[in-house]
Length: 172
Image 1 (cartoon, rainbow, N blue to C red):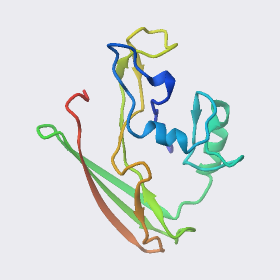
Image 2 (cartoon, rainbow, N blue to C red; image 1 turned 180 degrees about the vertical axis):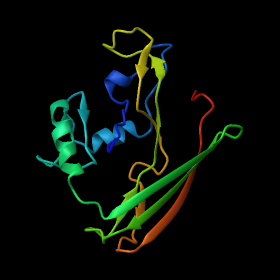
Image 3 (cartoon, rainbow, N blue to C red; image 1 turned 60 degrees about the vertical axis):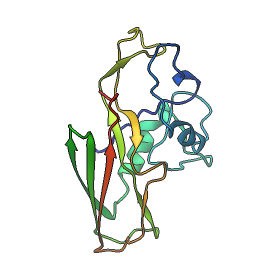
Image 4 (tube, rainbow, N blue to C red; image 1 turned 60 degrees about the horizontal axis):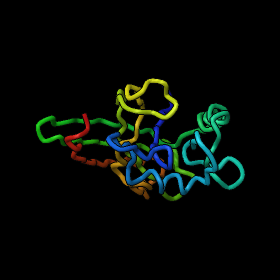
């Protein structure tokens, strides 16, 4: 309950065959390019460099490295509230940050990702034909690949940001 997975469809395995849905986003290849990945499946934890100058980790390293990050103190409390208008398909995300201590770095970044569950479709090696249930699928990075910069990171600072995104009609 303290971490969230995001499945990013990119690379050769994500290229759809004729008639199949395309789950790639404009962010997949640039995100993979920043990690130094050399194979699949690969993942990162908080975009943190643990060893070797890259963020890409093999599946066997995800849990242990997640635990390292979860043990670190956080200088900021994050609150998120969303509303969705089904007529206009407008998603509004309200984010508040409250710094209980000063950040160790002069700027932080808010990253808001639209994730979707229960998408049934093809999956190479999934054994379910076109009925594989995709979970935690990245649909869009509302604040862009690198996020929205926050430069007021001292103890006692309150940061209030609101983001909107119109969800495409073909997202079910």
